[in-house]
Amino acid sequence: MQITDPDRVLRQYPHELSGGMRQRVLIAAAFAAEPKLIVADEPTTALDVTVQKEVLRLIAGMQARHGTALLFVTHDLGVVSKVCQSLTVLYAGLVIEDAALRDFFPAPAHPYSRALLAATPKYTDPGSSLVPVPQEVLDRVQAQVAAADRGWRNG
Image (cartoon, rainbow, N blue to C red; front, side, top):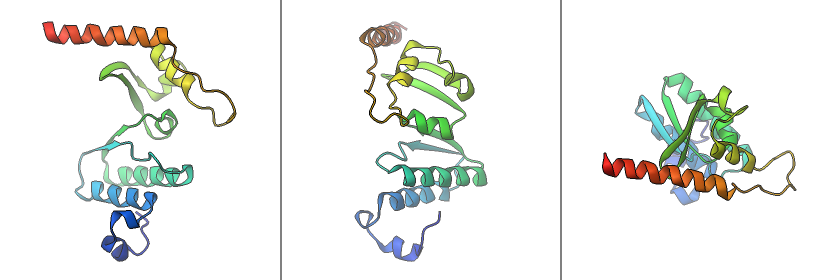
């Protein structure tokens, strides 16, 4: 995990470690038991882009070395585009779209998925305005959630 002086790190409290080092320790702990599946819930949130890139590289290396499946939970579609083979878009726990990455990014099927992509900040144009998800798209997705909820209650 590229932890310099692991004996010292092991004796430190979490608040004494940098965010990137804490992530490395957690990744090491997750892979230590050699599980078949790791659920990584926002593993790079609050890391700067340089540390984020390094942590993602470490996760990919460990995943390949151990043959571990990885369920990556994140709101960052940029990260998804770098580390995932497929994705599932959720809204209020309802699956909105499930697709292979190669199919999703060029042409998302659902209006909500298209709106999420449009709302993603453009790093190539940092001064551009953010685009919110249109209300009519939110209304449509909320109607789908309500219909699914009614189906569960009646089923």
